[in-house]
Image (cartoon, rainbow, N blue to C red; front, side):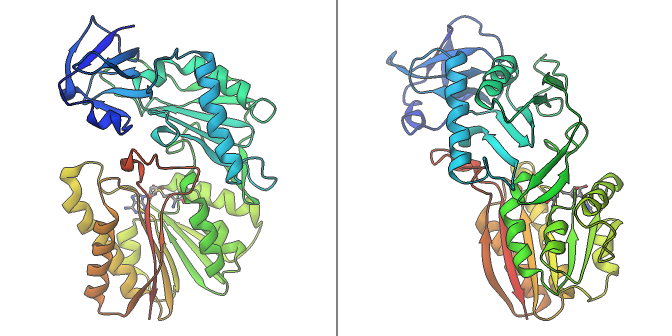
Length: 392
Ligand code: SAH
């Protein structure tokens, strides 16, 4: 195995179990490891401190273990079984009304660079690092073993998530099985999952618990689900007894998926309508008919330099909704930008509220669900922020 030696003192974060080693912390590398290879990491005093996947880039090593151990079939099955155990413990796996959940959430499951989402009998696997890409076949084998009896298909979807400079040539496709039945169930609601062409792994699993909360507030309300994608929030609002539900997304494909999902759960129900339109345009032209609004936009900032513009975007968007929501209205507003902190987001909502001059109260502070756990040693893993506001 190739060895990586750190600069003096650069082992500190590893002693606190942080799973990343930045290229600037490395003094020298013995030999020339391939991208995605497992390397051993030593302190300047030549003491073993970790092992992990090597990659050329700002994060040079993603730690797989703080013990010297082989990364083999037993390693992968043990890690995946631990992840599965957690999902059973929190009640999203082995649940008769739910078969949609995240089985592996990268660093949150001590598997940096790996995402696995379960949709009924299909696992969608995504690599965000060269190492997980290189190990995909081993991982799929272990996954099939751990999930035996509940998963038949493993679809690999990494064409857009790997660094294109590393000559990895990822191809999307089935590593196991190949079923086309793509209807999964989330807390008793059915969703058609487009893992072939959809965003991420095909569905936003991370909003599940927040959708449950929305359902509780939906009764008798007029709901606007802005940035609806596959219509997740819309289906919960319908089940919660909303008077009407309007779903809006700029993508015609998303609107089609939303219509299909509503039809799957509430065939012929006239309470729902969907519109393919830009969010800002829709908010400008709409009236004041809504008293429950969801704003779940895509990440406005992907990098630190984009933070200022992103906060401006969130402020404008939220001010429009707060201005127009009916008195006594409830706003569910989210940011999934990792660079936008909880404080940033809250301050932005403060400014947006002040711009409208309305009386606004904070009812709930939301985050990602327990199947997207945050490794306590890797606080960067917390990305989803949500606020539920009551507007007088
Ligand atoms: N709320 C969804 C996930 C939203 S993802 C869920 O629970 O599943 C963000 C969505 O915003 C995408 O579907 C994207 O098509 C849409 N979008 C991006 N920019 C937009 C814009 N300017 N106006 C309306 N929709 C937009």
